[in-house]
Length: 137
Image (cartoon, rainbow, N blue to C red; front, side, top):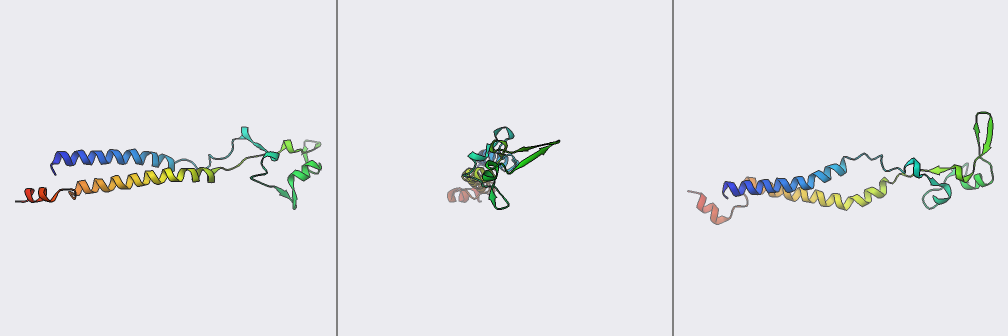
C-alpha cells in the first residue's frame, strides 16, 4: 500500500475513533449524583405512592400524617405535620443508566472497529496479495 494511502486511511480511522470516543468519554465521566430530583421539584407524598412507601414503626407515613400523629417542634411551638409538608426526592440513576446503555455500546463498538482498522492499516495487513508480490524484490 502506498504511503499516502496508508496515511489517509490511518488518519481517517483515527478521526472516526475520536468521533466515537469523545461522546463515550463524556458519558462515562459524568457525575453519578446529578440524577436526584431537584429540590424545587420535590414530589408530594400523595403522588409518590407508585415509587415509594414510607413506614414509621410499621405504620404507613400517610396514615400517620392523616391521623395527626406526627408533630414537628420548632422553637417552643409544636405543630402537626400534614401530607403537604412532606416532599420526596428520587434518585433516577437506574433509569438513566438503562437508557444510556444502548448508546454507550454503540460508541464502544465504533471505537473497537476503528481501532482494529487503524491497526490493520498501520501493520500493512490490508495490502492485496498482488501488491505484496509487486513490492517484494
